[in-house]
Length: 438
Image 1: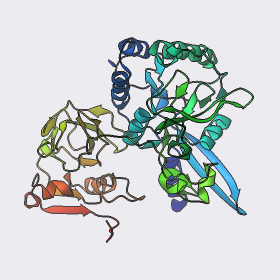
Image 2: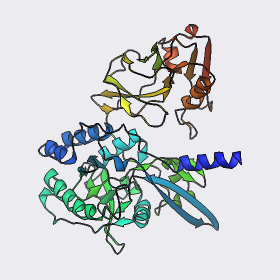
Image 3: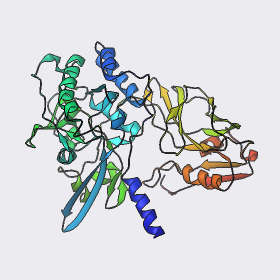
């Protein structure tokens, strides 16, 4: 019975996935305010504004809970299955009551995907998602013009979509899977092959299904990668696909000539992403969360990485959801007002002129009446399908439930001299898969 209960918990957790973004600030701009903010901006500046709003969590709350899409196929006489998780509607900026379904270039979409650990869908996934959508809305085309790539036309189409969506909220409340409102920006082999003349780096689009199930837009790669018009939408798909009960990344699944058929009708896709050019802000690797007082913790980082302007810390109480965030800081910050003898989990993000970094691994610590004697060191930083980068959840809670308060650091922080092992009576090193190759 205990084994069955644990299995039920595991299955439930696998099928309850959320988008990895901070909660929306109550002072964040609504969709209509944001439209006015970017209405006259050049494309590159408006895309940076979209990027900032999304990564700061300014998306509708209903968009955070991901919807499972279950697919099966008999491949070579063997039944295969997969489950992947998608946002219920196309990515938007704003609140539940006032949001803006924002078209964007595939480069911006990929940058967002890289941070929130998502992918864009394949053509076959777009069809599967539409088939699974309980709420299917009629497409709202706007006659082609030179203005179709401008924010005013984006906003016009947003209003048209919402004029159909809002009346059916009693039947299909927010969080229901919706289809038919946009063309999808997709991943495809056609990003890198079968290229059109004078379009060496295209965006690939597909979909916009009509109520009869027929898509308006066939697969097309004739626009360059900075192009986005009012009809384009971005559907985020979590980059952890459960294949026959085993989690796989899109790269792993789409490289498999057999299993790729679950989500691809063009065979393997060896580069299921758009190439983001230029420098990127490196992910914070060396940091620690240490005791400061019975009601505060200190976050330590080394001298700034080259090109990094600041860090920002996000925290929560379960290691999965991070409800709060600090101000930006340079090398350390104290998080105060915490409940004594409780566990708090933290992850960092760096920001530079190149944009935001990916989120760091998760660390944790306990504000307690006296300085803890336990230091947990996370040394499991090798890329692996089994590395969730938050094993502090298990190690930290084990110490805490046995009466020990603790601090934690990355192994890089030990090497950089941010924290000394000699200050602690117990050091717990978290290690994982090792490899002679990397």
